[in-house]
Image (tube, rainbow, N blue to C red; front, top):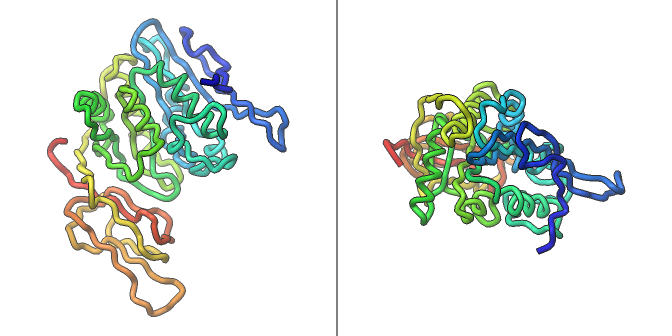
Length: 332
């Protein structure tokens, strides 16, 4: 296959703490010989496992980039055994624009894997991550939140896999994160996801949904940084002891967990994120702002549990994910 056009400006395999960029040539109207410069760090101290930490897979999700910026700033290479690779803003064009997808090619990086070295900018990034970064990794942690359009209760997640031994390896690290909630998340669409590509390679993988709303918050920031450090400690890459914090196991059923809006309008939430819910409860109602006096459309819980995710902007459109529900269980 054709070589990737992306070139690291640092030696990803050298001992020590190195920061630089993944340089992707990109000729455009504003810069004939321009490049997309994707920040990268390699922190290595001798032999040991390699953990690949990624954030900014979607450009409007900020908990991951913030935690990884802070991690790189504060980490002492003497505390590392093995290697930590950090790509805090994988979809750098989207991150710079504050958008979920790339403003260059409208590419959703988390639907572009395994990518193409001769494709769009987004496909080239996916290809480099898949062919050059993933083979170096013994564990991948991809940090997400709800971005500008969703808000989640803070959770660390893995997925149900056919290979139960692989599922157990991922679950070990999801639990070690010690987020307020830990779950095996059901994805609506898995085609082209970084998650799917990593898991199909046999590499342990965990992800997160840590709040959202297109901003940062002190509590979310601390949950994220603590969780990343916990996973690195659990993996044997970072010195120290895992900092335990209370967590609840959240079961997100294969079917029926998501509620999709069938109307356009203004959302009136009747429950708060994280609140307990009962099947049949009205979670929200959508008002039609174009026709005064019209009865709002109610959206009801389809199960007992908690409201684990909600649509964040006040206006909703037909087809938007309105809510995700989950059940608190003793174990998963």
